[in-house]
Image (cartoon, rainbow, N blue to C red; front, side, top):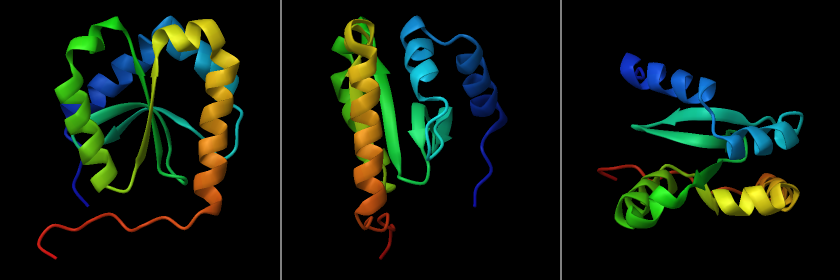
Length: 126
């Protein structure tokens, strides 16, 4: 298993400390959920906003600045999918307007993933 680069770990810690209002609102609704969720999880060379490791669910909250980052988001999603993660994306405006609904969607996805058999991540060179 490769060690996480120290710079990426520092960046994840900084992002936890400097969470957006939407991340804080959603976290307050999900922090006691089981299975456990992790904030700002390092996954490869990316940092995922919220993740449920056991269900392999990655949650990304996108602000308005992401509207012009479609290609980068698609690459990130493709990488995470190849590693066995299911990626859920929500706009910050969705969280502001309906945080409980977003939290319910996340918990439902985790519940579904926990009962469905998960495919193994792809391996290069196989």
